[in-house]
Length: 113
Length: 118
View 1 (cartoon, one colour):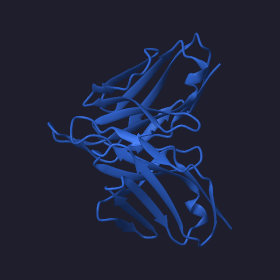
View 2 (spheres, each protein chain N blue to C red):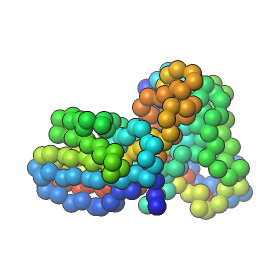
View 3 (cartoon, rainbow over the protein chains, first blue to last red):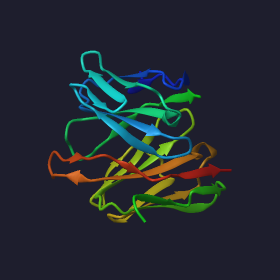
């Protein structure tokens, strides 16, 4: 089983649509969770961290379900500029001397005009 | 310059060549990372340097040799690579807080070096 699993997509949605991505992780001891965004032929950039209580940043909402080891990202009112690959990222271990991030393969979103 | 820079952006090399990838961060961070990104695969962590000391080597073949001369620079020396090593090599940096039980903040990535091994 992969450490972090995502549906690779692509998700093709019209502008203004609401789209949700899911991600599951295998290590129940994982403590920190993130969504990164990677545009075509560019580097990944942090989109948002995912907190236990869920968190929202504008049109983006992230949720964590520790019991099911499941993370989600909801994008409301999709814009053309949201087209990118969304990477689910889990930080392994607790404290320690390293910050080992485990990346999913990413979910490709294509927002259509 | 700001952020994390990488040179070269593109590199084509033969299996017998020796080349080096360079990464420089202008963020005052004290931890640096090398990742490999292949098509259809997740980013794979290769090496982690914290305060210029290698703290993680993720079972990477010896044909990849990292070097961290100071907290702002990171190199990846390449020799006798294989075609399957063709990938995007990404450098990242972050700020380590604390000593024992240290935590690290967000990682900032460079634009990557697109490597093709013939």
